Image (cartoon, rainbow, N blue to C red):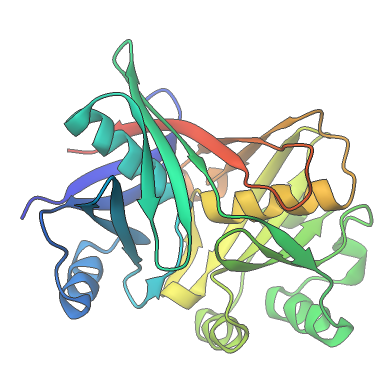
Length: 276
C-alpha cells in the first residue's frame, strides 16, 4: 500500500499544503482509512479507486472524515496525471460529483478542480460575537466591505474578513474551544481573510474540527469564499489570487476563477510538488 505525499498550491517547488494520496484497486475500510490518515498526520489524506468511468474519492483528516477537501483533490489530480496522463478526471465524492484536471507541463505538476456548487448566508449576530471572542478580535478589526458569512462549496465554513494584514497575522485561538464550536456548527474551517486589493487576498484557515490548528492552503474554503464574493458583487474581474500559509512558513498560492452565474462551481488551481 503506497501512499504518496504531495504538497498542493506550492510555489517554485516550496511551500504548499501536504496531502496523502492513496490510489488503490479497492478502498480500505472506513476505520482503516481513518487510522492511516491519523498515522500520516497531514490535514487530509485522499483515498481513490476507479469506479465505472470516474474515481470514487473519500477524504480523512487525522480525526474525522470530511466531505470535500480542495488541496487533497489538487494533489490527487497531480497523482492521476502521473499515473494515467494529462486529463480531466471525474470524481465521485460522498455528496457531490466534481472534476479535477491534472497535467504535467514542462516538468511542472499542475492541477485544477471544479468545486461543488457554492452558496452563502448571513450568520446570527450572536454567532459573529462568539467567533470574535474565540480569536480575540474586536468589531473594529473587521473589513466592512465583506461581512461575516456562512459559506459553502462542498463543505461548510465560517468567513471572517479583517481590515489589516497585522490583524490576520495575530490569529490565535484555543484549539479545544475552536474544535467544540466548529463541530457544533458543522464547519470544516473558519476562514480569515485580508484583502490586499480587489484581486489579491491573504488568508488563514483554522481547522480545529480536524484536530489541526491551521491549514496552510485550503482549496475548499477558497471555492466557498469566491462563491460569496460573487454573491456580494465584488469587483474581481473573473480571477483572484489567494496567498495562504505565510505565517506558518509554508507560503501557498491559490488561483480561483469566478464565473458570472451565482452559485456556480468555482475553478481553483495551483502547482503541486512531490515531497518524497
